[in-house]
Amino acid sequence: MIAFVVALKKEAQILLEKVENLKEFKLADKPCYSFTLNAKDCVLAISGVGKVSASLTTQLLIDKYSPQYIINFGTCGGTNSNVEILNFYLVDKCCQYDFDLTPIDDVPLGYIQEYDRVYFDTFTNGLDFLQKRSIASADKFTCKQTDIDIINDLGCSMCDFEAGAVVQVCTSNSVPAIIVKAISDVFGSGSQPEQFSKNLMIISEKFPSVISKLIDNINF
Image (cartoon, rainbow, N blue to C red):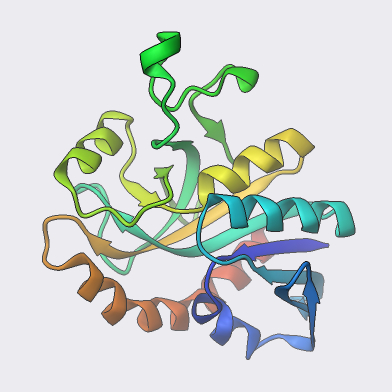
């Protein structure tokens, strides 16, 4: 079993149109779909945007299905020239740049004490057909230079709402997390909201082929 966590139905819609044995249901009011893809049993949940929604959905899927892998895919923003609009990237590590205990505990930004780390590693074995980049998550769509500087200082080239939370939950449950993101907008190259709206459907049309190849390259 492979479980997918996707924030927006628009990001998953075209993939769902190409799968076999599609069934729709609800899990804690989250729209969910079971299906077969490349002869693998799959379930996909639309989490909604944000770290809390992503965490809730990821834990629900793990508890109910005990998946071999959790895959989070969707759009994200680019923060520097290491990424390009409409390109797809495999995330090798992620952090949460809005998690900040620096004023009281003298720890690095993003450091989560019970895990003794800032960065959470993802599963990337055998998936070399995608370039690897790191991502920073927070509950905000940022258009601010101060946020971009923080993300870049953390060694990340991408930012989103969900990846850091998904991988933290997977780490707690010892479930490999695979994160695939496509760049919908890049800071400094025009209006980010306009770029996002323009590129969302273009990216969604390409996700089925990327996800299909991803599944074919995972070792079960």
